[in-house]
Image 1 (cartoon, protein in one colour):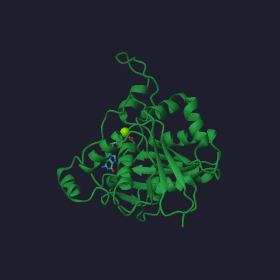
Image 2 (cartoon, protein in one colour; image 1 turned 30 degrees about the vertical axis):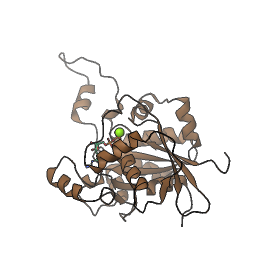
Image 3 (tube, helix red, strand yellow; image 1 turned 180 degrees about the vertical axis):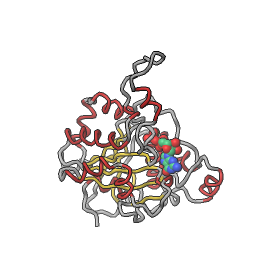
Image 4 (cartoon, helix red, strand yellow; image 1 turned 30 degrees about the horizontal axis):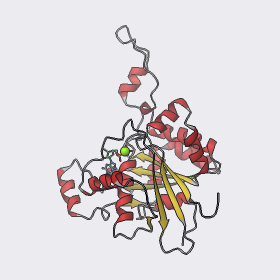
Length: 279
Ligand SMILES: Nc1nc2c(ncn2[C@@H]2O[C@H](COP(=O)(O)OP(=O)(O)O)[C@@H](O)[C@H]2O)c(=O)[nH]1
Ligand SMILES: [Mg+2]
């Protein structure tokens, strides 16, 4: 890799883990008049998708569902502001829908292209929805147990039936097999839905992802940092909250908390995953 090659960061997450709302919020911050430390580097790609998801987030509308089944790759060239080193970064989203990651967990395999991306990346941003941490719901769990005469159907193994905690451990194991000493920025999305606002993202992880927390602690060859991020700032399906959110600035209502619950910025997990030293 030459000096001028941008640092690559891969964004990963299962379906419905909050990826789209994060990218939408990042786009609004990068494209707008906010104090975001990243700006767009000569982007030649198609902005329609970004404009659409950014527009929906600004209007407090749900993200589009059109990504499912598309497995679309997406990447965003970014540059660090006020920096004489001209540091450039490429945010790569190998699959907007997240089905690729689901498949990777189910089959422990992925494409050669994804493999290359991961081995080249300096770090990853991995998403988990704050409400997805509990164990399998009774439905899939009961269905997978040996049935009586009336329910002999065989249910294939579905990774969506497993607790997010063990999904994350599995995913990190897969990533680690392809990339030595990975930097993994874990984003707990929909942070506004975490009722106790004194709970730090680090403490949340300890409570909700015990397996992951232990796994990370026991290994010094993986670097994990955690953020709690509310890209929406609240619930769009709650009329009172939506009314309040609509009155606020779309970037201003984004809430980012670092591991210790200190206020951060939406680009922080990305910048951390680059491994850059930033003053
Ligand atoms: N309350 C709340 N919900 C969110 C937030 N971010 C995402 N969601 C919801 O979580 C679901 C999945 O989000 P999405 O960004 O589409 O996930 P993706 O499938 O990984 O792209 C959607 O119903 C979103 O409205 C947030 O900051 N707050
Ligand atoms: Mg999406």
